[in-house]
Image 1 (cartoon, rainbow, N blue to C red):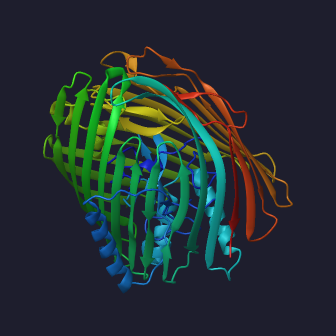
Image 2 (cartoon, rainbow, N blue to C red):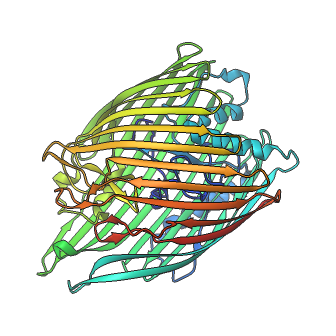
Amino acid sequence: MNKGHEFNASRGFFPEDIFQSAAFSSAGDEISYFNTGSGAGNGTGRRMGHGSGSYHGTLMFGTLFFTGKALVVGSLLLMGSLVLSMTPAQARDDDSLYDLGEIKVVGRDRSRTMGDDRKATYDASSYIDRQKRLSEEKVSFIEESIAEKEHEELDLNPNSAFVSCFDVAYGSRGSSLVHLKDNFETQRESRYDVFFDGKRTATDGWREHDAASRLDLSLDVDVTTDYRTQFRFGGDVSNGKTYMTGPAGSITRTARRDDRVMQGEFGFTREYSKFSDLSFDLRYRDHDRRTIIPERLLRADHNASSLDIKTEYNLILTGKNLLSMGYRLFVDDLGRSETDSRGGLRVTEPDFSNHNFFVQRDIDLSNSAQLVLRGDYDIHSENGNFFSPKAKIKYRNYEKTELSIEGGKGVDIESYDQLLFSGDYVHLDPNQAFGTPNYSFVTFAAKHIFDEVLTGSLTLSRKNYNDYHYMEEDRGTIERLHLSYANGEVDVTSLDMNAEYKFSRKFTGKFLYSRKSADLPGNGGQAPYIPKNLFDMDLTYETGDGITFNLNETFRGNRYADAANTRELDSYVLLNAKVQLNQHENIEPYLEVRNLFDKDYEVRKGYSGEPRTFMGGIKVRF
């Protein structure tokens, strides 16, 4: 599947983790437009990452519920253990930035993108150096500069090849919602959660020729009225030629909502020479949930099981021309049963499979210009066949100015299982479930370094979804592409402007303004939960004696709360503050306050946002 104008061929493997706050965040394990956090988890490497980024496994105390489908996760673990026993390991950093409907999010993604810059002379450097340069071009200039800074900081101590981080946080949060019990009696419920998080990650520093291994684990304890328990794990290994991801997976149980998720993944990349490599990825996911829809007096039981297998081969034809080709199989087994207040029952089981073949050519036209051509051919069991061409041309002038324009068509396959888990869901029938999931788009992007203190970028994009897509705001953010109903055509127009300004050597500001419009041509309305105006600001001041102060602001404009545009949610402004002590080389304590003034705001109809929350932590390197 290809989403957004970066032409990624897959989505992240843990979607519930990637849809976090897109507002500025000072915590390193949360995503942000500028990702200014200091915690582990930043980076963009596909195979051989660098810096201190890591994948967190998680353990949550509580009751774990296992089903027979745990055999699938067990088989992944067995497969991974065999590879672990045969190969040494190398750390990698596999967070990548990609685009879902013009909204940037962070997720796990090993697919090649058309945004890769391949102007370097490949045969003049090692494969690892080449992948480092390619991955650095996938992110925006702000994330790129942060990643480079973290890498430089790591290299300041040439004797330190191992970095370990330990973070502890305590806080509280609250929410309220309308709850419909099984007997269809409606009641409003207030919820107040207290949580304690402790995370420990260990990551080998990036070294060109060293083999290494990594096992990332973290411990989370979450006490809520949902009685949510979760077990997660993950790791990476490499011997310099073979890079393995996983085995990794999770089992999640939410008792009150009767929600169970099991998922696992395994993958590897094999480098055959400086000029070719082969990658393989496998993912399995099973999701069961019971959903109560108050306004429709409806109880629905859902199940979605999916298997995703992908392989990709990359070959450097000449010094500056790359050929990529691959195959992907995606199988989704869906099921939904609905019970209304009168006892009526409706069962729907829309299953499908999709075969995807792609070929991509990266051609350097000159020292300053690059052309990328890609073609995808999808064979869908229900919708027939689709051909999706894409093209991008990129120009760079003396490392100061970058211009790019891209366009084409894409096919969205993976979003089908979201049909079963939408709170605003309407009755599902096969014609709606298997509408043509394709879109067309065009994007223009420009970036310029004006001088040593100011850098700016601008992106204009237009995307047309032919069927059922719209964006939903979740927990105060707008990064989530959410499939809710078969709405028909949706036109999304977006203007994004980023700037970074260094007021002084110690004082830096980062700014984002975004204006988005998601029109529904069928009824002349607007897609819900998308504020037309969004503004984020992040200010950082370093005292010079090891103390760093950070203040970030998030503004979200008015947005509609339903597709009929009958109710509008108010705009709001949130302030977050953080202070961090860097007076010791290996110890960095911090204190953070989110929603500094305890602002009351509504992120969705009937759901309040996060109240004022205090977080404290310490990061230790050794």
